Image (cartoon, rainbow, N blue to C red; front, side, top):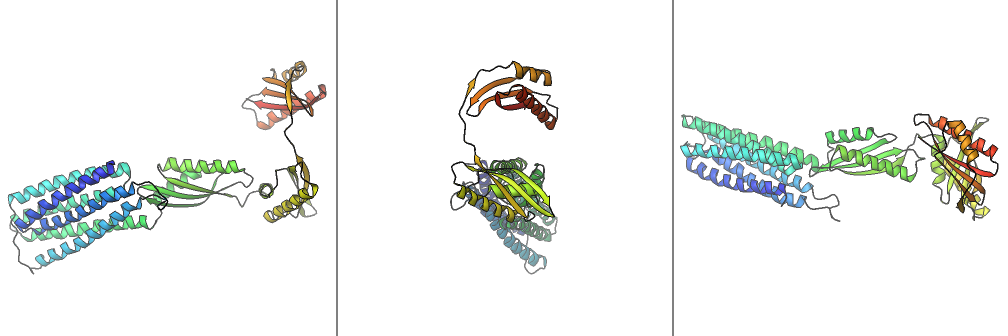
Length: 445
């Protein structure tokens, strides 16, 4: 049995004991205050039973018929409890007003055991209040939170009954009826608050504070635009539906990474929350990004690169290189190129014309590592950087000899400076070693 259900079971036992105690003494003393408290505890007994069974339902995992879990069972239980409380508060109030108006004769026997019972009840109410409040805060349980609220009203009502009995013993029998009216008002206020809170949850009213926390968490993520956030709660758990915008040139993996980042950020800000993220391309992205996104979405396109924008006579022209499998026929490749051009013009209306350059997709080439003369390359690298290369190896491929070179540069240097240094070294190697077909330079701090 879960700690929440154990707490609810203790509340059931306590409520049953209080009903018996208050009812017996209330009948013996003819105290409307005690009788009203007995009825109040009777509703608490029903509510505690509802809470006990509701927590059992709410604790069940999600299933095909209840894909969001069973957390709202707690709120249905709390709403039923609010209805019971509202009804009984009206009955208590009517009876108390009748006594105060003198419509019914009554005598209150404020005996010593009546006071003893009320004191015991106050101690029990205080204990139930503390236990239920702590457990509800620990497990964020709406049902236990509603129980704590009711126990607080019980404690206030019991204190009012005690004061009413003191007035009755002092010769003011209406003090008991006044206490009963106070209890009725107290219960009605508690029932109204309880109903409003749980109706908000059942109607999926957005949790304002949780939504604010989620928005702040998403706002801290770079290159992610929050387009829509919808939130609701059930059983102490937050559910968030998030729509974000990312660059249309972002790869599928990048979009997925952005969604994961949003889930992690909201989950950290709201522990235990259930987050679903939908990714969309940004509408206000640049022409290049939107053109790239439209091009790669065309079926059959393997790769696009070298996008160039030109302003010619007041017209905007875009050219790009399109790579397709090398075994494609020219006719099939031309069809793909035409589809691409139409897609780009539709996605980027600012572009007046699109020109494509067809290229075969490079197939993996065979290669093997071979020994080679490293002295010339090592000298060039030392002259340029003041240190020898961290790694240097040669591969023999179908296109010729390829040199793979790793340089160590200052980690605080700018990326464009590092690229310029690598390009300078590549050019010197090509001039002094014309036997090398290609030079691949990797830079690292």
